[in-house]
Structures are given as C-alpha cells and as structure tokens.
Image 1 (cartoon, rainbow, N blue to C red):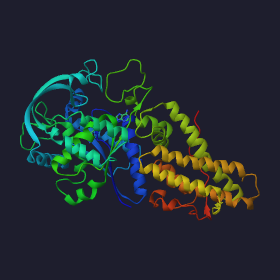
Image 2 (image 1 turned 45 degrees about the vertical axis):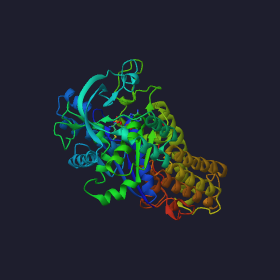
Image 3 (image 1 turned 60 degrees about the vertical axis):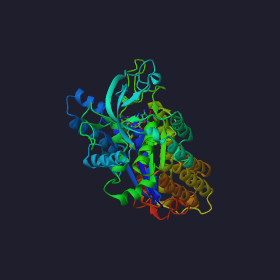
Image 4 (image 1 turned 90 degrees about the vertical axis):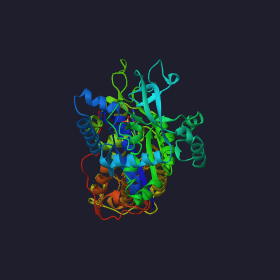
Length: 508
Ligand code: MSP
C-alpha cells in the first residue's frame, strides 16, 4: 500500500466535452480506481483550463462574458464526467481563487530565483495552440497541429529562462529513465531538449483574461504557464507544505501526445526553477481518430470526413450502449500510448462479443443453472478446479497491466478467464447433469464471477457491483483489498443467486 496521485490535463473550455476528452478521463479514472482497490491512498485530479485568448474568443463568439462562459462550459465537463462515472477527488478550475494564489506564489519564486526576465518577443502565434511557431515549423504556412492561420504577434513580455535548464533536464532524463513513458515518447521529448531550448515568453499584455503577474500588474500570465501549475494548486502549494510533501512525490500526469513539450520540457524546468522536484511520472497517450483522420481538436473542417471525433459526445454513446460498455470499449480497444481508430461499428461488435456473448452470457448461464440444479443457492468453489489456475493468471496479469498503465491488457487477461470459464461450462454441461453432481463446477463458476467482479471494478464499476449482488455477496467489490481478495476460494457458498435481466442485451 502506498500513495498514488493521478492527474488528467485540464480541459479547455472553448470546446464541449467530446470522446477524445472522455478517453483520457476514463483511463485516468480506471487507473485511480485500481489503485484505490490496492489500498493506496489515492488522489485523482481533473478540471478545466479557463484562461487565454482561445477561451476569451469563444466567450465573445457566444456574446457572453469570459466568466459566464467558463462557468457554463466547465459545468458541462463536470456533467459529462458524472455521466461517465468518473471518480475524481477534486475538480480544479483555473479561475478559482486558490489557483490564482498558487500561480502567483509559484511564479514569484521563479522570478525571485532569477529565472524570469523582461524582453521583447516577435513571432507567429497559433491561437488554438496558444503557442508560437517558427516559420520552419509551419505546414504550408499554417499551424502544424490545427492547420489554421497563424498571426504575427509582437509583445513586450516576461520570459522564463528555459535555456538555463538544458543541462539539468538532460541530467534528469538520464537519472530517471522511467519518469516519462512510453519510451518512444520520452525520446521524443529528449530530442526537443537536445535540439536546444529557447527562453519562453510567459506573460501577455494583449489580454486581460488571465492570472495577473504579481510584480507587474500590466501583464497576465500566458495560459500554459498558469495551467501547468494546477497540479500543485490542488495539493495546497503555497499554503500547505505538508500536503505538498505528502502528494507531490507520487504524482502521475496522464497527458495526450500533443502536449509533450509543455509537460516533459517546460514543466520539469519550471519545477526546478521554483526549487521543487520535477514530476515523478508522466504517461503519454495517443489520439482517438475517426477514419484515420487526425482531427482531434478544434481544427479546420474536413469536407471529406462526415463525422469528426470532436463531434461525438460521450452522452450520445452512453445513451445508446450504457455507461460501462462505453468505458469498457475506451479502455479495451486502444492501448494507452497508441493512436486508435474509433467507430460505432467496432463499439457495437465489441459490445456483442465481449459483453453480451462472453461476460453477460456467463453471468446468465451460471445463475440459471444454479436456479435449476441448486435451488438458487450457490455452492462452494472446488479448491482443485482447473479454473483456479486460470484465475490466478488473470489476477497477476491484470495487476501487472494496471501497474504499467495498460488497461487494455488488464481487461484482456480478465476476458481470458471469462472465456476459459465459458469453455469449462460447455465441456461439463452442468445443465444436463444430475443436481447433486454439479456443485463443484457451479461453485467454481461463481467464484470466477466473484473474481471477475473484483478485476473489472476499476473499469466497469456498476457492472461489477451488479454481478457481486447477483451472486449473493454484500457490499461492493470496490471495498475489497486487491490482489488478496481475488485469491481462489473466497466465495463462501450458501448464498442466494439472482438471475436478473441480461446484463448486456445483444444488439443488432
Ligand atoms: N488545456 C490543455 C491542457 C493543459 S494541462 C496543464 C489542453 N486541453 S485540451 O482540452 O485541448 O486537451 C485535453 C486533453 O484531451 C489532452 O491530453 C488531449 O490529448 C486530449 N484529447 C483531445 N482530443 C483527443 C483525441 N482525439 N484523442 C485522445 N485524446 C485527445 O490541451
């Protein structure tokens, strides 16, 4: 048992929550839930990123003040996360007073340490990225990420002396080779550093929608500079040193691949400049795409693509397939770290094969036969069952996989156990046998369901609770301590097993 602090990036409120955002939130949620199951003291943080030109522009477009607009859109993220059963312990909004105060304390320290200086900056700026690009980095004269026009900006700004941290960052990468994962993404970040670091402009005078610079009230901080600090605001930086000492050494940032430079280069350097340790772990995930299209954010419309991933709201899918099926698909289909293609067809086919035919069928079958052959009372498992070995393999496979941020592998391991149990039932056909002779096989199948409920509780919490109750257990699998609780033999027998409706009715 230990401590585990996991964060998602904070989501821009210029946009409404879409499936790409949900992919990130569901993965972080499942990993947080797994750690709670291990008994780790866990803190799971998500939130909304509410400053900057992009948000101010969105507010203006909707004829609203930035404050009203951010209130409305932040609430839409909170609502989406409630729908998806996201179990965040805190939700940070960068417009909160606690964040202003942490940002000002943190950046004042960097200023006092001599790493923030005043200078003039001229460059090509993409409002969607909230970032400057060199001419060489543009694609056909446009932003390489959003393919939109960039604007020429000249500002008298304060600069963070990122260039002063080149050597210290290289040393950190060397000394903590696992801090950034997967390895290919770590190398990508490393090559930015090896390519040479320039100082970064971190304040704006052209905007008022931001956190005021404490030593110069004519400037506000550049949105990325305030945003990254949210990870410290939530643990009381500047007001509660003990809380920072408790959580900061255990932080895990889950981020998308397009924000590597901010998190893996700027952020560790900012931490060093303020005199704290860089984040202990950053895990980079890929993008969900549709039809191979890279449209992942608020980009130019693609005439050829009938649907953009950003047009798919999590609620439109959960209404059709149910919350746990959507969570399962997001976790199972696209390995964390790779890009993945999303389609309704693939979701429907995984729903039918994995959920209706395998898991749903197993639950229904076992409950039906316990009803007809055992009077609805579950027998004890067989200590010698061949399924005991399959269960042990599933438990250790799942535990290893969750530990390395591989939910798809954890679910694969669990579904191998479900498959083996369905096969065992086919082979022994307890529905054809005499009542007295089926106790071992049915008790073992019930034990598998108990273990499966424990193993899927992080991914599909409501389904896990439902299975738990149907096999007669009280409480919730989420309150059991893993992996010990998943050892073979925990099903006590003598409990009433309920048949219930199909967990996942087959879809056409
Ligand atoms: N506000 C910044 C993050 C600041 S963190 C200090 C931001 N916000 S975002 O709303 O644009 O993106 C938030 C996260 O959603 C990113 O990690 C991004 O990768 C993820 N996704 C947005 N579209 C996505 C897909 N199509 N697929 C998977 N994740 C994607 O960047």
